Image (cartoon, rainbow, N blue to C red; front, side, top):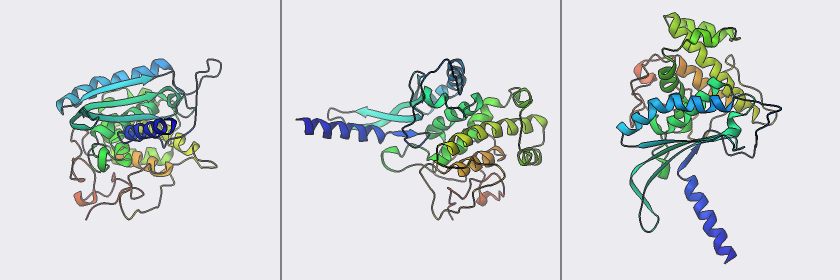
Length: 295
């Protein structure tokens, strides 16, 4: 009986994982609440960022036939965040269409990581939303609804953060912050107005926060830098989590892609709503360290 219970528990666990996409590779990090040595962001900011995006994306999910639920677990010490989608369960426990139960889950351990800023956490929330809204390329099988990791990263910047911060006081948000010269130069070259440039710079700082998070998770790993883009060229599109430098490159390129945020990414056509070589774009394209354009 004990063996049967173990097998059943494993099956349930694997079934759950088949419906779940994580922000970070699964890890054993634990960051609890320590009032004497606080790190990361506050509980108030943790909740406020989610509320800001909930107002935008819950109605957008409803327009696509989905019920989007935000689940916040500030007390959890797990360092991760997730996107899930579920269908209608029959009497045998099998799920069927419509897969209209959309969920995003945010755990306090991730928000308390020392590299996570408030704007960086905004990127995290946008990434998980990107699994639901980001279009192609998507995963196969039970998670065919989910944009893959690189595409969710692209969505987080080019659609979600730009939509959220378009009319924000981005000049104030970046005031007094140290911004790498390559970022200042590139944002100034790619965008015309001061408002657009300031938005680009703010996104870069948020991206740096999360790039540092990724880099810190690798033993003896180096923190990624805007000045040292990943030179890897994949022979086919990568669906798992890209390395830290590749993810930072993705954010940076997404921040300078001029396609408006209100033009959605295609569900089947990777050129729609995106910068793409087929569209004649030479900047703002998804990096070749994870993305292989279709011929």
